[in-house]
Length: 461
Image (cartoon, rainbow, N blue to C red; front, side):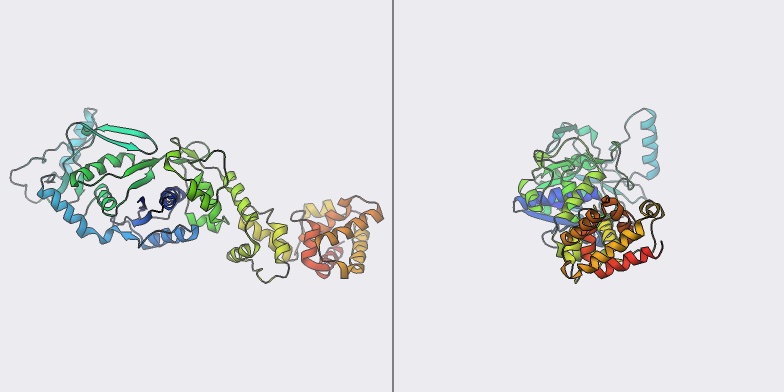
């Protein structure tokens, strides 16, 4: 059975790079009817935040990525880690190191002066003397002294590094708390993780974790390291570029389906296909098709996808989503017409809510530039004549095409260009030259409200 995991540290919000990693892991597990596990790596007691943990779980709920079983918290597993530390000490595969911080700093300075890579020199590896007094020791694992540490990466292929590149790293601090690379290896092994999919910023942690696996006789998982997401200039993605809290995307009016579709295409592809439903992602995703090179964040692409998903979301579902943006139209008798008229123009739910509000709320003022452009000498007469036609046809006006017929009747009768009525009418209804089609707007507002807004504009002439 395929078992994957996502293992964030609760020191801040979940950003989109983390969500992409989680998505790839989730898709691979779901495609194979396996398990996707959530592990909260909260051993850094000083930096942990309960709010950050809640934010991570909330983001998962929003995008609809379910995990199997309960979330696992490393902070509740210290007894397990201590058992394995004691086992390695007992088997002679780890040892106490009494080197002080001052000694370590001195060693590093000397190595750097000789242009060597700073590393622990193993001075306590086989120490049998009397421990120095007053020093609380750390525990270091015995890394192999010769040969290579090799593994096959699902994205990058075969990777080998010389064992000499990995020193006897610390697996327990002087206060007894275990270190990152040790607990990750223990947890992945005990939780039965078969496939570790993570960012390539973890690539150089992998040899250390392999040392732990081998020392304890655990079976290695398959590793796949994802290239990072860059901004459009090819540099590391920053908060300004979009590496922000996943939930801010919700606040900014993005649909979760659009965000997941966007993320799955950052580093993975299936032919030339751009639009993927969740079910298609589950059936098609394979880590072997992940690109080796970094992907580029493109806001225009995300907005294009979001626009697509807004247009294709059922109107009743859209109405519920819009409640979060202050728009309450669930019981509106023209709900279908209102959303059909506006969702073509809204790239986000924020923009869609603005378009709807523009129609439903009569303008309190008029855009000065548009007003001057729309109002001509004959505007008053044209608008008055249009009101007369509307009133005369009131009982038969229901659909946008009905209102369009009245507009055409006026234009033909007066032998004028459509702009002569269209521009001032738009300013009257919306306050500016923006927004949905005039016939759609009038069908939503009805004759009485349309005439009321025209009269208000006429009173300014």
